[in-house]
Image (cartoon, rainbow, N blue to C red; front, side, top):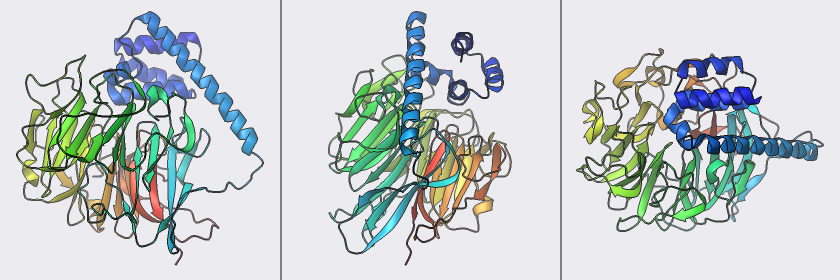
Length: 510
């Protein structure tokens, strides 16, 4: 990319010129840096780009920042060439085992990824596009004593509440351009490293799953746009990465290159975490919800007058959401809104509603938490928030969706917005047990291990080759059987990023 093109991008971002950014994206379709930057402008709003690239500083500092980005890409390209020359002699890559249980009776759970991996988020060792799910790593888990770790927005199950030492917890999370796996208390993380979001003390990308030595006894992880959040078995919350939005909760706004303990004012342990591009939530054992991060006047923090942002639209001090009348069990952070589930499965939400993402039948938003009117008598067991849309899973296995539908992410067969929760009829014949949402795409897992996806397919993140850029109806994702001696794929869970996705699949051959 020449300097003139780069200068033009910067000027467009500073001017918030969306139409010309879109034109530039079409013109320079072959340049991955141009595409990624334009995607962040168009999909994540200029405010997020301003924070991510720190464009609110002087133009001299801006030029230095862009020069640093160019240098990092040159280093990444060199690393890629060296890695390719080192591994090119192997025609059939061997899938590594990242975990092997000390047990006589084990089963194989496989980590697979697909979509666009320009920043290494697919974990395959190179910059690549995977059109369909491809293996990244294997896990040999104890057959009768492994469970999925706590997932943001999901009510705890009997399995995730077990405390026995022999139970192995495993879980996934996808950020904007980075990925993670938690297994047996260890955190493996990879992808884009800008802002320190990988937690290794540097900002370099990592193209394969890499064990983070700075955390142990990890129970769950939630990855955001430019930061990461982890919950340990002791109920402690650690955050790291870009801190300019306040999403780290350390009362300061600089980056953290290593995981750092969040010292909130709560009493007791934390049992649940959630995050998004710019804000973070934590639920205590007693059901209190604490929240921190960015609030641009939309009310996503739910704190009310006089308790909002204290620094350039951000609040880096964990603060209790006082207007929730019932104990909270789970939370989910959307682009500019927040959802919470009570212990009995009632859904409350607050924040921006210009795209009907609160599901109240109108476009009136605000900071005050309220129940969703049409769901007051429906028990919800999981919620998932996208950039501008919402998903909910009922206790009888039905998927509900509402909000922005412009990229087919609601699954109703159209690109229309939906102002109240509606059943995804294409999945009504299935018993859904798990849901997930990315910025503009969605997914559901059935009780027999089938995976369905829908929404934005522009970067192959739906895992089905040949789809149009907008896929408004759920499609089943197929898995290629390889000569690896393992059984068929039974999907257990799914996580979605901006342009990629990952899943855990049981490969039991018995």
